[in-house]
Length: 175
Image 1: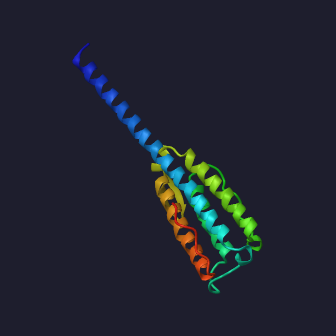
Image 2: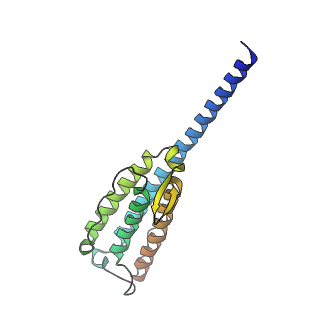
């Protein structure tokens, strides 16, 4: 065998080994994201459960969303950001007239189950691919995941203040 064939074979072998490492790293990253979404679901459901059903229409000030509406908005953000990844349609949000505790809690569970399924389907290529973010903007799949997480944490923080305004201690942060 001549030197060119040997060197060529070595380069191809090294490239294949490197791509396997990158794919394994991406798989591990996806596992981490799935684990995060499961923890986020658990915490969000605990926050939702902490508010008595009679207070789901509570607003801390007139311009605010209701507590139930804020939780629906949280899930709507997940649906927006993860929906752009093209891995299936998010569950339908309850109508504004039906944002009572049972409907909202069911929607949170359904939405997170969908989101966990979306995140679990992602590939290395999905993380770096550009997606239409609306209004002429684009973002990568990784950007969409981080945007969804940031929006969720931000919005869940609002709902925890609603709880505190009602004299309820929010569940401990566990994400």
